[in-house]
Image (cartoon, rainbow, N blue to C red; front, top):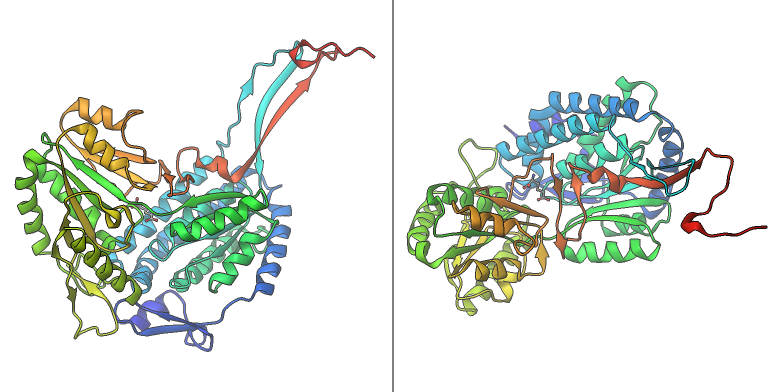
Length: 499
Ligand code: UN1
C-alpha cells in the first residue's frame, strides 16, 4: 500500500499535510510525509481556557452517560482499526500486526472505561461518633494534559483519555512531534463519536501540535490539574518537577530496563519465544521491551545457541510488508544511540552478536538494524542505561538471590519476569523481596501487557499507573465526607470544647 493511500484512508487531504513548519517523516524510508502547522504558546493558553469551559459542563454529566461517549469512541475505533493501525505503522514504523494490536488496546480500554463509568465506587467508613456517617467520594479533577511518546502514539493517549473522560475531565493532548498524524487521525475519530453522542461540550479533546515549548506551557499552567506524561526519564524529570512546583498532579510513565530471569528449571522453548518477541518486537522500542537477560549458568550454554539461532533468521524490513517482524528505528538519532551503546558494551568487555545496519542501499534515509545480543561479563553502566533499540544484554547467575539483585540493581523499575517451573522461585520473585518493578510476570515476557492491569513502574519509571485496575483514581479528586445526622455535636477524638 502506498503512503498516500494510508494517509488518505485516515482522511488526510493534501491541504492538511502541507504548508506548515513541522516536518513529519516516516521511518520506513525517511521520506517527508507532511509539513504540519504548529501551535504557539498563545494557542496553548487558549486551549486551556476552552478546556476549562468544557470541564464546567462535562463534570455535571452523569458518569454512565460520559461512558456512552467512550462507548461510541470504541465503536468508531473498531471501524477504523485497519486504517489507524496502518497509519501507526507509517508514522512510527512498527509492523502492521503491532499497529493493529495497538488499536486493539485502544478498543479494549474503551470497553474497560465504559464499565468503569458505572463503577466509580467510593467507600463507606465507620465513624467513631454516634449518629455520624463517613464516606469517601470521587469527583472530576479538571483539565487533563496528556503528553505521549512516539512508540505507542495512540494507545497511551487512549488509556488516559478513556479514563479521563469517564472521570469527568476534558483532555488536551500533546503528541510526540514525531507522530502528530496519528494524533490528528484520533481527533477526527473522536469527533465522530462526539457527533453521534449529541450534546457533549465542545473541546473535550484538543490536540496541540508542536515541539517542546508547547508541552512546557501546558505543564507549567496551574489550570492543568493532571499531567500524564509518557517518555524518557529526562523528560519526565522536567515535567514532574514543574508540576510538583505548582502542586499539580502528575502521572509519569518513563523509562524501563526490563529483565528476564531464566532459571535452570525453565521451559527453554517457551523462554526463547518470549525473549524474541519482547526483545525485538517493535524493534526494541517499547517501554516494556526486554533489555536484560539473566540466565542461570547451568542452562546458559544451551539457551544461547538456541537464541542466536532464533535471531539469525529474523526478517527485518518494511513494516508494511507481510512476514516482516522488525521494522525500522524511529530516526537517525536512534540508530546512532544503538551504535554508541554497542561500542560502549564492547569496551566494557561485552561480546556483540548482530546489531549491523541493514537495507542501507534500499533505504538510505531510514535506519534498519539487526537486533543485537550482547554477552556481558557483568552489569556495567551501559546495561543500566535504557537504549531505545533492539539490544539484549545477557548475563549469567548462580543463585536466585543474585539474579533478583541484578534484576533490581538498575535505576528503572517498569517490567520484569522470571521463567521457571519451580513454584518456590516464582513466588519468591513476586514476593516482597523479589522484583521491585511495577509489573512482574512468571513465564511471560515483560512486554505486551493487557489493559486490565495497572500499567507503570517504580524508581526512574516515575511511579505513575495508567490503564486498568484502579488507575482511574489518579484522574479524580478524593473527598472524605462526614455527615452528622444526630442532634448532638460530638467532636472526634472525644475532645471537650464547651462554649
Ligand atoms: C509503552 O511502551 O509505552 O505492555 C507501552 C506493552 C504494551 C504497552 C507498552 N501494552 O508492551
